[in-house]
Length: 245
Ligand SMILES: C[S@@+](CC[C@H](N)C(=O)[O-])C[C@H]1O[C@@H](n2cnc3c(N)ncnc32)[C@H](O)[C@@H]1O
Image 1 (spheres, rainbow, N blue to C red):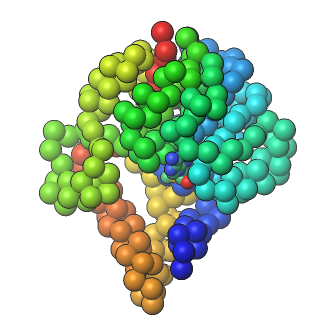
Image 2 (cartoon, protein in one colour):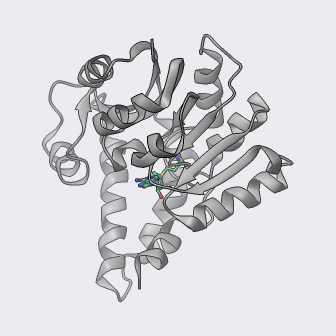
Image 3 (spheres, rainbow, N blue to C red):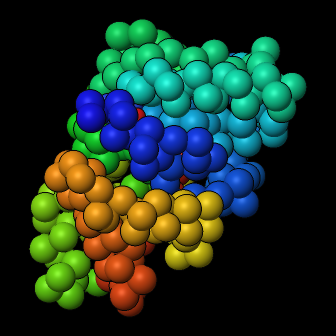
């Protein structure tokens, strides 16, 4: 099985590919001090649950980018079905290359995707592409407790060594040159509904799969779901709402 088959096996057809919900997206959007944006970019859009929320709410063109073309195809199809096809343009593009393709961005949105290049690297690479007075809204896994339980610490050290505390992420945003305006914590239920509750039975079904790569991914997902369920205020997904002065 190639990488694309593996992605489709576990994540194919899903309406969202990470923690978050329409309710969270719209709450964060409503908290922005501006509501009118000309150039909007959605980085790591996946199948575009939040891209559609933004397009529906703002009624402005959105440039949605991702590295995996089948997710972009699915987003395009969903946008057409929702009557939002004219507002969504997809780009198969690395989010690290945003500043070579766009300039003077008014709103750069990214949900549960920035870990792919790292929070700090993303903010540094995006900064030149944001117009003065423009916004970056990014959700990121963040440690809350000073110490994580041993199993959670080991898991995230392997899966996301870039995991930082909430305070450290705010400090990074400031050091890059952004003002931190607002934070929104994504409720734990938003990890489960439409995401873990779909992934868990898929992963369980693939545990006895003949291919070791499939078994390994299935076991990793089930471990993540277990660690999340046992998480007691150790880590959470936060939106960081940032403004370029
Ligand atoms: C956990 S999924 C989240 C997708 C979507 N934001 C959501 O919340 O449903 C992460 C997404 O980032 C995309 N991705 C990974 N590395 C990327 C990169 N360097 N540039 C753009 N997208 C990337 C993946 O293909 C995937 O769609």
